[in-house]
Length: 126
Image (cartoon, rainbow, N blue to C red; front, top):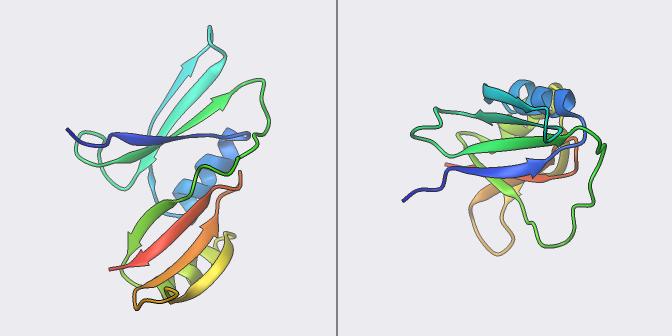
């Protein structure tokens, strides 16, 4: 068994694809439209779906935004240099919500950014 993907509902699919591919550097792996269900699924990630966990962006055609609720925490992405990654993301228009630095009560370096729909993404140093 393995984890296949995490699904996020997004209000503006093009904006979300741009964020995950241009700001976070993921690859657009596939896009599937389902006209009868009035939704589109897009899969993005750093590697192939057959071997790596990816993110599924689901856009329901008649919904522009969602309430995130309080149950979901964040997606975590491992990076080589958290400080540099924060600067790169900021330069590409990403929103940094917690600057790079040591974890409270620990030594591991982390930062947080927010995607266009408000989902939190943690950047963790190797």
